[in-house]
Amino acid sequence: MAKLSDFLPTSAKEVKARGWDQLDVILFSGDAYVDHPSFGAAVIGRQLESHGYRVAIVPQPNWRDDLRDFKKLGKPRLFFGVTAGNMDSMVNHYTANLRLRSDDAYTPGGQAGFRPDRAVTVYCQCLRSIYPDTPIVIGGIEASLRRMTHYDYWSNSLRPSILAESDADLLVYGMGEKPIVEIAKAVHNGFNIKTLRKLRQIAFLADKKYIDSIENEKIVLHSYEECLKDKFKYAENFRRFEVESNRIEAATLIEPTGDKYLIINPQHPPMSEQEIDSSFDLPYTRLPHPRYSGKAIPAYDMIKFSVNLHRGCFGGCSFCTISAHQGKHISSRSEKSILNEIKAITKMEEFRGNLSDLGGPSANMYKMGGKDRSLCEKCIRPSCIFPTICKNLNHDHNHLIKLYHKVRQINGIRHVYIGSGIRYDMFIESEGGENYLREVIKYHTSGRLKVAPEHTESQVLNLMRKPDFRLFKNLYDKFHEICRKENLKYQLVPYCISSHPGCTEQHMRELSRKMSKLNLFLDQIQDFTPTPMTLSSAMQYSGINPYTGEKVFVTKDQEAKRRQKSYFFKGSKK
Image (cartoon, rainbow, N blue to C red; front, side, top):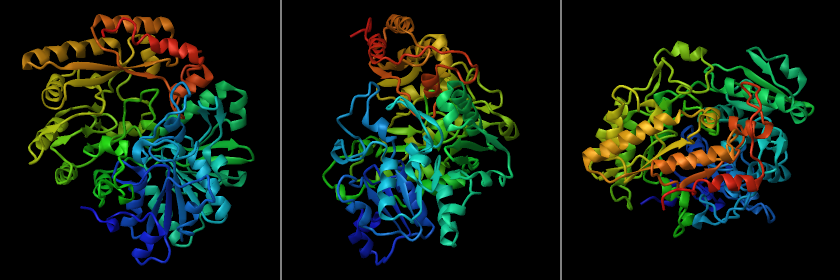
């Protein structure tokens, strides 16, 4: 049973109990504090702690009162860290048709209303009003994916970099363990945070004079103001951004914003096995902080018995933010690290033998990557598997199959389910691919295998960067063939999207007709939500394909979006 002292402190009383007179870093998060490697604030806090820094977390501070939550721990020696949490606060608050959600999975009891809209900006403004001279570093999904000019669906407008709105000093984008420690070390050694301009994987605002001092490759984008006037320039900016975010060695991006220049330094190379192991092997309790005793946190309940195998995704789906945040290249954990985590889970009080997921951003990209890394270093493809599988990609599933075998043999494990999405286009027509599918169906499916064809029509699938529907039909046939041979009465459950750029009502009629013909239930549905910094969102705002310059049909009217979504149910078997 974890003790209060096993967690990072969250109150002045907990700080005092450790005998600390001042904290080095204070983290503010829009989520409840769950000490688990799936929760970003815990990861950053534990990472800083492992390097000897005194860290505390203030979860879900009250921004409506006299700001006592922002004052209670005082001023940190190094800096404040601010994150909206594991989700963009606007995605967290609103549905695809812009209705306010009635719950929040990252709050005790699932209650809504414990974080503000645009949480990063609001938290920073609160801190600036109290501590005007204390450095602020922002990170996490909301900051990372709003690091430059972006389309904001909720205001239906282009917004500048979140740095311009929040008045933070530095922005850490992507997975932040390495840059946050570099920042802490530099400030600890006496460097002014405003002079930390050479670190990788950070963004900041600078003046014209700084531009001339940049020595490595640089790309000057169209200004925020130009993008407001010209959607083609915005689309071009997005294309340049995505190309650089997929390179191993990227250029520095420069975007004029008002009288300043947004600087986005290149990202760190993908984490090595040792580096990613060191992050997952930190002493997490894997539990919510005791302050939430007796209150369930829905997001935690979903993942408390799941294990993440890797980071990154080379699928490149147009509507997905993973590659913009975690990167295209895969960083995989060692088998030892994974197996040790599972053994620790088996000792948890509530564990009954069932792992809910053994996966990652995509379930089946573990240990995969380029055969010749030198070719990857030159590559600018946004996807390694669309429109075709790259010849340089090693997509052998044997590492995964062997890992599954080892996990099933661990004492205390009864069932291991694969809850993450499976990319069937990597194995369904590949040599040996049926072995992986059979393994998943026979041992790792709870009765319903969930996959994401997303649509049936090639015009829409191409804009989504998803494979031809023919591959899904092949999967459908192989799935039922295996179920018959193994005497399993399982279901195949397709995930689909309505109202994606390029999708018309006629396309939705065809989707409904083709799925109904396969006698499939269409209960896993999603109306497209344009989240910041995705290709789909860029097309949604501009009506332009940034890679071809061609115009794209876009559904923006809420009633039209509802009509598209209704086709999921027309003709479906009930």
